[in-house]
Image (cartoon, rainbow, N blue to C red; front, side, top):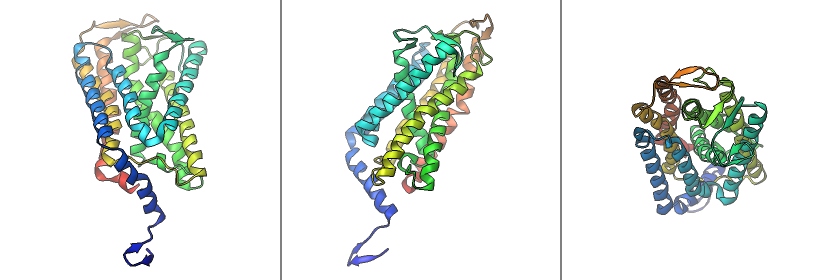
Amino acid sequence: METVSPGKEIMSDTFSLRITTEGPSRRSYGPVRRALGWIVVAAAAAAAVIVPLTGAPAAAQSIALLGVALALVQGTRRYGWGLLLAFFAISYVISFAWENLSVMTGFPFGNYHYTLTPQLFYVPVIIGVAYFGIGFVSWMTANTVLDRADEHLNLRTRPGRINVFALPVLAGAVMTMFDVGIDSISSTVRGAWVWEEGGGVFGVPFTNYLGWWFVTWSFFQVFALVLATRQTRHPERTSDGLPRISHLQPVLIYMMFGISSISAFLGFTEGDTVVDATGAAWSTPAIFEALMIFNIFSIIPVSLFAITKIARGDLNRA
């Protein structure tokens, strides 16, 4: 550290960048935003615990919409309105295009059709909104696991080149974990969409999950490249850092998808079997139990890992 005048020192590039990105956030991510974020988290927790116990099917949908609410509260601070709207447009348009293609051709998810309305072409308009809400909390959870990788995407650096691909791949996997647990219930049990040729995962084909990872990776990758281009051209323009405790909010909402599956299993009151489009009969209690097991060993451990990194202060050292 080089002294230039009594009591004044020149900071290293790393430390000055941290002051630039984290200092303003502590001032501008004030009590109102923080309180709104915790209200959204509390609402997600209530939806995860209470709604499934009533037998209503809307817990996951409610949590996804609360993910949208958190994005408006927190994402606008981290990325600004312009980049957040870009995230929404990218996730909506790309997911909508892949979904319609799959309904028409069977690629990349498999052969299925929606029963939900209203639809634009072959896909309900709400689906893209759900992709955005689940996508935001999945992205932020993966971002926490990778120590705020979205702030280090400069393609002129080795860590930046690694992060620009690692973050979308992990975020896509994190988001796919949600679908592994919920798809059989939403389709085979609830009938929100129908797998025309059935499948081995309680009426769902394995191609659906490979497709989910591919599709979610594709829109996360585009957004990562948008951030990377911006940071490479203007290295001083990273994402605005959030206070450490605020990184906890999207992780907790993501965890609520896993918690809701436990409540759904405990509150299950429907029939013993359900028949898919091919005539195969599946045990409904087994579907709910499998959903819970999937999430206990995927969503919940990933969330706990992210929470541990926040508690240890790993994000402060990033």
